[in-house]
Image (cartoon, rainbow, N blue to C red; front, top):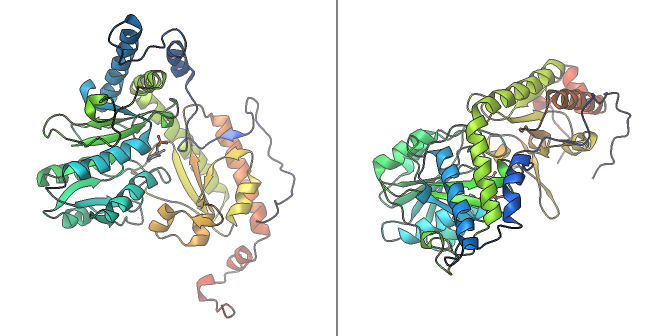
Length: 420
Ligand SMILES: *Cc1c(COP(=O)(O)O)cnc(C)c1O
């Protein structure tokens, strides 16, 4: 680990901005105060078990759960009965993929996914490979999108499931889910999508997009942590899912366990707000995002956006700052909460597998930053973040011999480095 670069920042903190600034809304989002308010009674006076059928405490909790089911369904064009509650999207993804694999084993053992999925999908698929399933991991193009022709070619008569995310959590790239769903339905293959980052941010409609199963998480849409949902289509086709947690037979037998009533109320409220405010919020967020991008590009050279700008979440900007050492960059902007292109595993700093899948080298992946803008960010915060990043990148490049060589017109790719 390098020692932090010690230099005094000249960037002024604008009025109304307090540090540190949270700009990591793809990792988790703050709870919306309106969501908290909706949840509060279910921690205190309305504490009933939604499965208690014999008294008003149970009825009250059950009614709240059913309201939430409707709020979630309304956001994605589903019906309330098609919503199953879980502990979050990791569980939803596991339940969808393992539950379908188990239920449709007679029909086939082939699953198709793609390389930039969340680990909750990739590791679930890897486990199924150990149990006799065949998994195809489609590559992505340099812009982060899959090639639909690749998908079409990969399907065979043993394919039972395609699982492709709607929006990527690192680069914000939106996959063409409506086209993917159409292809799947033409072939009689089920389509699951991890829509955690997309739902509530861009329009998602399970009918128009031909989605059979869809994962949601509350804490990515200003709801509480530890609660999520799985949409499971009931007609055309009726999807069956083998339960992965056995018990009291809650949630139409697909997911046992006493329901997290306050969490579910929070998820429902978060979906209701998202439905009402999504269009205006998307405009607001893409405005902030573009402002950030334009400021950085106007003031720094050798920077580039990772992933398609045309097929992208409104609040996402993922940029590489070439000729800057990633860790020093993060250290320099430690009053801003963002994610880097490195995944911190136990001992080593692994470059992000998502960025590597786009063709980025390890060093460029390490010098990348994901800015995840959200509902509570402000223009003044964006301006501070832009100024701070510009200052730190310039400072680090003054210390960079590579940058100096590039400035002098030396083509780094043509250099014969000493024996390695
Ligand atoms: C956060 C996230 C998950 C995991 O959701 P949890 O509710 O935290 O388990 C899955 N997929 C994507 C794309 C995510 O961003």
